Length: 434
Ligand code: FDA
Ligand code: NAD
Image (cartoon, rainbow, N blue to C red; front, top):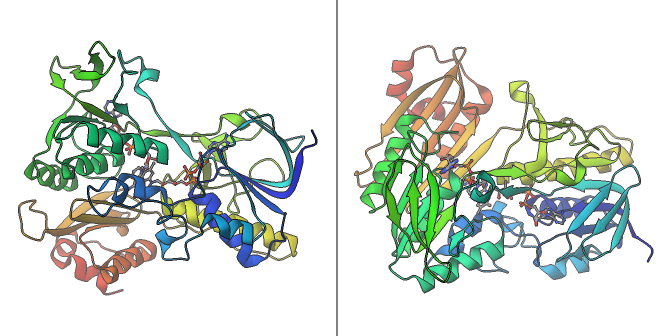
């Protein structure tokens, strides 16, 4: 069978693919020129909903409610939007072979595709305990969360194990958001992670102490400094207990694991230059192979502001990198120039009544300000990161939209701040001056 040919092909149907499609339509794409090939069964959606409103006991989010681009306040792109705009949305189709020199792709269902320009938007996949050799890690009711069918399995287990015991393995984003979601669903929740405090990739010990205290007040038990080394099961293979490295054994009806993600680059190994675990790009998301772009979680791109190459596994970058790559493609077709991507890192999370935002770089000395008592009626606090006498990063819990804008501005402008005591005293009003 002849390969289906498209001018533009996007591999992956996640956040970046959806925002890229919208940008193509904005800038002009003819019917039949663009195809999105996705392993998932559904049109691109806002993945962050899966660990938050999707798991609520009441008023939960379900598709089509959170298809892209609602997460950034834009129009929701329903499946028919793609057909109305002449975009082929090829779902349930996993690409298993990519030959970049021949510009040819093949799916597990033996379909073949060719393209003029390829955008790699395959995102990340979860790290699995089975890959670390953890005994019993393939038991029933041990869950991971990346795609919508994973979330459906967790929802089913929440209903099946009402008031049961849940163990969360991992103290990062998934760990903190899932611990809250399961607690809201009235499960008894214990978190286990190896580090001395949660989310060490971003949080300082002081920031983490607030969230750990808040979670403890909600009845969540936290066990730090150890890892799960095995799982016990009953005669039908359901998990019954988690065995820890320090000898403790925790009863469990449900286990959710969030021990990190890795970018899906396997298809392109040996064909593109990689760096820091991702596909190396320039400031236009061009890879080392002509006419091949990489966006979202898989791209290791120049963070212009900090003069370094990095990957960012967060939704704001997935959206913006996709838009920038499409702008770059269209500009080069028109012989125009586009500025390089100049990204200010932005991460956020929500759990219980809490909501934080972070902008910039979490490098250097830190100053905490505000009320970080987890037992306060309305705690509100923040942290600045100061490097080379300048504020380079800012974190805020419970900020208003204006206040979040102010900390974003500070992180971008990097104003001088020599006196840390003064900065602590000024707190949020320091950011509001700019
Ligand atoms: P994304 O993972 O969205 O999409 C990749 C797509 O490619 C998927 O559809 C996948 O099936 C498909 N694919 C992969 N290989 C394929 C192949 N060989 N053939 C065909 N299709 C293939 N960030 C944040 O800033 N705030 C937040 O609150 C959250 N919350 C959050 C919750 C949960 C549960 C997760 C898993 C992640 C988040 N994130 C987040 C991170 C954010 O969602 C993530 O950075 C973006 O989704 C990345 O977008 P991409 O398009 O790069 O990958
Ligand atoms: P993560 O990197 O945020 O956290 C991984 C955590 O796993 C570490 O902090 C550590 O505590 C723990 N860990 C590592 N090895 C362990 C072990 N053997 N036993 C127990 N704990 C162990 O990764 P994640 O939370 O799994 O998130 C996966 C992906 O989803 C990431 O790309 C993340 O950015 C994304 N995500 C983002 C958000 C958000 O931005 N709000 C929300 C959910 C998911």
